[in-house]
Amino acid sequence: EVQLVESGGALVQPGGSLRLSCGTSSAFTFANYSMAWVRQVPTKAPEWVSEINRDGAFYADSVKGRFTISRDNAMNTLHLQMNNLKPEDTAVYYCLGAGYWGQGTQVTVSS
Image (cartoon, rainbow, N blue to C red; front, side, top):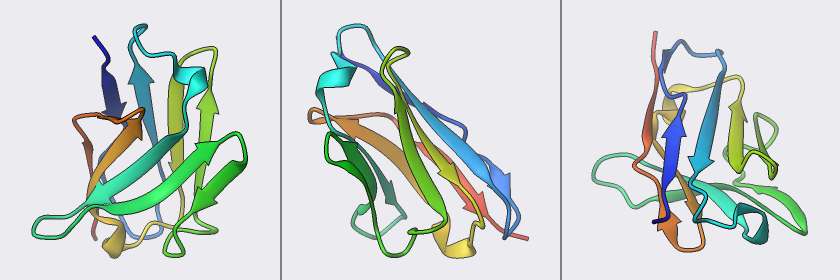
């Protein structure tokens, strides 16, 4: 069974930082796939945030320069380093790969 499990979400003040992680089960050949982060707030469609694949790392304009995606293929883990967080970054963050989604982790940016 393929499982993606996000962690690292929290309540943080504007300007703060968080590091999200996404662990994957052994049934998922992690290194073979592009991986992405998507976020969603209630009543809105999911918003693509970032992707990492063989061609490199890519970011939505809204997070470029503040977020960094990385992956550890040996540990089957995806990360998202988020710096200079803004209230508009508040959302549930999901990792995606090979058509699978995790359960999400809540990020709240508020003073």
